Length: 213
Image (tube, rainbow, N blue to C red; front, side, top):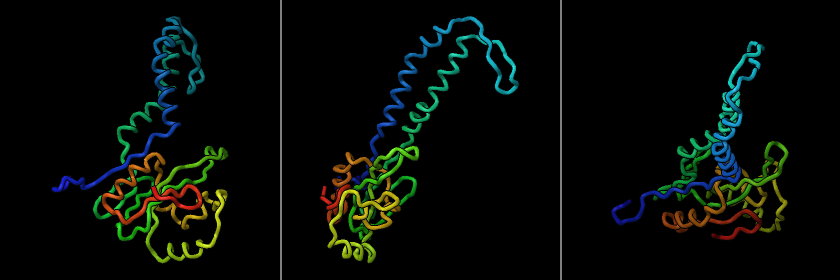
């Protein structure tokens, strides 16, 4: 906090994805069912083929079932550990905005034209179409001004997308200055930007015709 009681930095964390909640729920179900699954296997011996030697070796039935339970818990456990190290997606302070994701982006407020919430067309697993929510920094430079001047007379449709999934009504290259952020974080982000840079608009660019948040 600063001396005036105003926070010196505001952070915005992304919301958990639906897939993360589903995996965590699956892991919890497996964990709750583990005692029954193991005890139901019994204490007798079974023959298990060694994947290295190819030989059949005796083992307790419950031990084989326990190995399966641990394998099912592997990915949910990794997700749970990752939650403890999950940092904020956006950091704001008096001087700049910083985005933290696969690519770290930082810009001074004087270099920012606007902050835009948008969505990128993606294909999950290579073939399932979907949308990825993003927050991006639109730089205040000649390229942005030239794009806006050229695009001012066009009427965009929702299906106007570039081959990389970026909407054509947004300046090219915006994906390089963007990170994933749920749209539900928009009001929190807009409030933080208004505190440090009230002249920088935060807009909803998911559809043609940007609307201020």
